[in-house]
Image 1 (cartoon, one colour):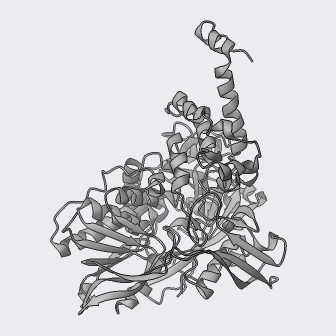
Image 2 (cartoon, rainbow over the protein chains, first blue to last red):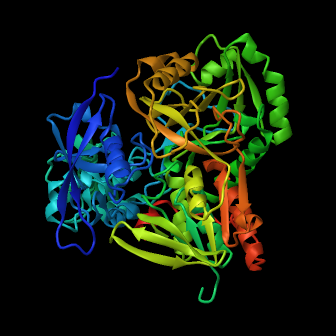
Image 3 (cartoon, rainbow over the protein chains, first blue to last red):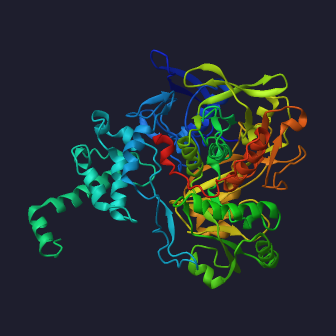
Length: 249
Length: 388
């Protein structure tokens, strides 16, 4: 038999119309394989069906189950209770986004910044570069890495202090358009991020890249946007672009 | 919309999402309620296969035909939603090769295009495949994002006036005499209960359809049939890889983003809320998947999970494999309960067709003659659902 133990879950609660949020505690018996999402599903099924959380794919592809687990932004579906230190697990909603109820945040503000970057969702696949595509398929493609989970926005210290900041997810999407335009208007996207609340607002805390569950590396993307814009803004560069097409390195 | 008939859809999965879209296009007023987040039940947890239908040609040709027809429609109405890298059915053994002719004939009968590839050609397309393979057949499978396709249906329905209410749980069916006239719901956001009146209620709750039917005093032949899926790190193939044999356990690998997803097992349960992920099934997925792609065994496991299929079948069914993947719509007026329709069975790839058939039945009840337009109307991007 697999080793079982009982873990106390301290869960953030909030319902619209209530004066203030509160915490409920529940005991959950877990095995080494139990994920935080499974534990929360158990709490909802057995203890309190009104517990609100978001989940869908259960394998870190949909990005819905982002939350703060003992203060750290994580996807609940791939976080094993066993891997969290301590006998108590505190579960709270993502920060820097409005709360709808319990562990659920309103993603509207996230998409208000993400969608205008117009990142196409299908990209070239860089895997198995030696593989020949089959007849009828021009080139192998795949879905973009970003799963729109909001972990990077939650952990970002600048997003916490500047509500107008575009934030790491949107800026990373902008960089993907610059990297692989797929018919999008690159100068227009660069103009959108070249603002005081755009890529220049980042403090290089790099927490976004540390918590990203999907290899997006928003911190590096923001630095790359800055590099691209600096090269465009240098006066000698502008002059050169008008006359000489030579690319300085 | 004022004065239009009002339809209440229970269930925010792929079926409910496609229903909300079809019903609004036909001029109906629509409210959709889902007790959790949308797609949190079965819908979000499938392997992400855009079916060509080839998986079913040997055992379930009706389902195969539905799949290929919907495959072409979805490519049209949801552009840029799929990894369109096609799929392979790989024969690993001489026994697998004996299925080649029936497979090709079955595909031809169902209208699924095929191309037979030699061992060498197959390995040039997919270098990680088991090098001892005999041959492969190329079919138009694809990869989808299991959550985002239904979000597109929901976004478009919402844009056309449908009211989508997640975290809103049906606690009872509301009757007027013997006629279903709406539902009593509890909003988990506000802790309030209220009644939603409707001319027709549609039970689109997948494996939970039996529980809603029970509230209305009717019975539906639903067999919740879970399967285990395992995602490993690393994209080991670009195409969808299937084993060339009658559909069974652990015989499909769906690549998606940077992951490879192996599925599935199959059993039946009474309560779709209480799904176990048996360790033995996880090991079986890895063992069987590694027959197709040996390096799979070396990759770290990203996640293992279970999802309950909403299969149509008798209570005697025991593994779920013997049940068809096609769908069935029930007008409970046939049992003396007017105003309630249940749709069960099917799969994410055929949700649009399920919605078309169900909406046809609802429109016939209400005397509405508007034709179905969901084969042509291009869906909004998934991001529009949350952007509002």
